Amino acid sequence: MSVIAALSGICLAVVALNAAILSPGFVVVSALGMAAGCAVAGSGGMYVAHRLSRLVPVAPRFIRYGAIGLFNTVLDIAIVTTFAARSGVYEGWMLAAVNVLSFGAINVGSYFLNRYWTFASREPATVREFTQFAGVLLSSLIINTALVYILTTHVSSPSYLTASQWVVAAKVVGIFFSLVWNFGGFYFIVFRSPRADVEASAR
Image 1 (cartoon, helix red, strand yellow):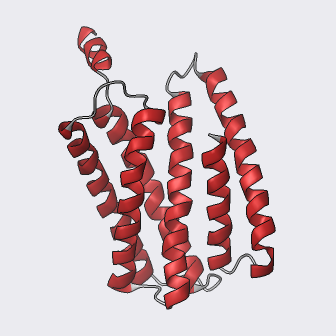
Image 2 (spheres, helix red, strand yellow):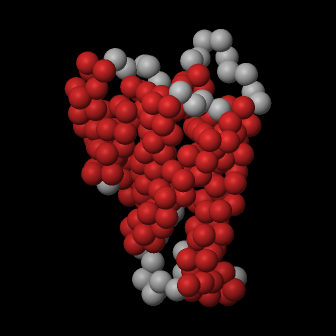
């Protein structure tokens, strides 16, 4: 948890740099500070989740999912905003294409993290499971990319935001809906254990 949270902090510093919120001279110091802060927050979150697990059994699982989701989110935003800042492309199909590549690659990696850490699946990996995962991911990708494309291309950014900051805002909106959609798909479909199915049918 601490490692994933620390990496999230580093990616967050890159996002802040790309959005012109952070000056280049403070990147290293800020990255280290954010990494330490996120690591502490992650450990604290897991402690609270374990304390709540008697009342909300899914709490630790959701916190682990959230940690992976946060890392995926800031890494995804860092990649897309780095492309936008370096290329000067802040809208259109080229930005959408980069979003597809970034979102897709990152979430394929999240399959293994979610399978073995978040949901602790003990069943052998199967083609059916990965197909279900790909289906959830594809639908999530469509939601994410559609929101990013619509917001950056057809919605005018507020006057108080730069073009780069508007890309960040669009990514945050798209990823928020994707995370909620993904958790439901992973929890109820992809990594649903046979024991849970038996218990559900017994009720």
